[in-house]
Picture 1 (cartoon, rainbow, N blue to C red):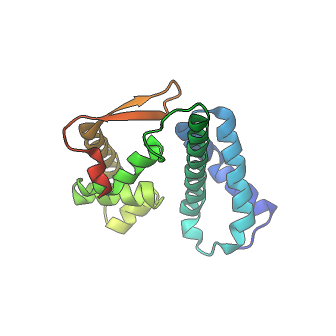
Picture 2: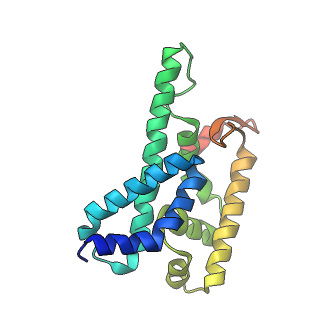
Amino acid sequence: MSHDNTTTAQLWSLFGEQLRSFFMHRVSDAQLAEDLLQETFVRIHTKLDGVDDQQRIRSWVFQIARNLVVDHYRVKSREAATLADEVNASPESEESVEEVVIGWLPKMLEQLPSEYQEAIELYELKGMSQQEIADKLGISLSGAKSRVQRGRTKLKQVLFDCCSFEHDRRGNLISYQRNHADDPRDFDA
């Protein structure tokens, strides 16, 4: 696939609004969402020559977007840690709360029934569309949608069974407290 302004423009028209919504749901700041959207298309434009599989273009585009969100929170976490050091706060951990919880996800996913675990891994972690999941698993599109939704619900329940969470005004995760005597960091094992 060669890249030129037309191809990048086509990708913009196909994915621009979806990506804007994707970023808004993850960063809750319109200006930051726009910045991440622009950076996504800069990366798409510079790396488009390396994409050979037209069928996977959506997955590739959204993987770039997911990586930018992760990078944003990684930088934000470092900035928060630096600020905490500057005001003599004693941080509980070098990892942000979000990074800790994200680290638990593989173990939490293992607690789900296999059909939901697989659907969540394919959709959320590998960036496949629900249609691609349906094709891969040999099920209907509505079946794939149902598995993703039920998987999310079950994963959320596993998470809330483990811990109670506190969020700031913007909805960012700032702390957690375990609900049971079991240490939630057992998910790290």
